[in-house]
Image (tube, rainbow, N blue to C red; front, side):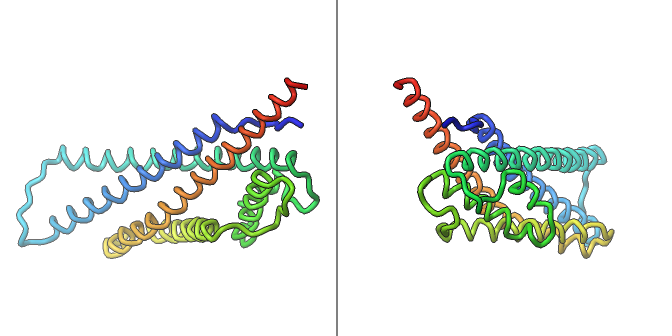
Length: 222
């Protein structure tokens, strides 16, 4: 028995991009907070503020760079995460074949189907975890509460991000204040969602690589 995919390098990219995305989101929130303070200062007649046009241009450019960079990193991260989900699920299927298993293809596809995306991807991850750490156990058995917390944070983060994007389409400064606050709430869900997912990626990858190495050693001995 040989696992098809070595997830070592892929997992490093996934983890690195998730950490980078988290840092960029924090930077964007800080930039938005300063932008809000600047606009409020300009609008307040009691505040005498003297800022050069060059500074404003640089500040705007920084926001554009952060925004575009964040978008590129998020998209790249999502693609690589889905590849990791597919490959780790495929390996898990080799370790523990089962008719109850969500196929690697559907482990990815479920993420794009409304409503079903709220729990089906979690089922796929759960089965991958169970098969990786207990090949003779039940692939449907429950996981620690930490996993429920992670998935709740992940789903909530996606829902709130979509709401924030729709609200941001309205060009109203009063709404901008609300968006900045809303984005900090979103970031509060990003941190646990990303950190726990990083832990899941690392643990599953490490275990599957360990299993693969053991299988290769056994094959060499034979």
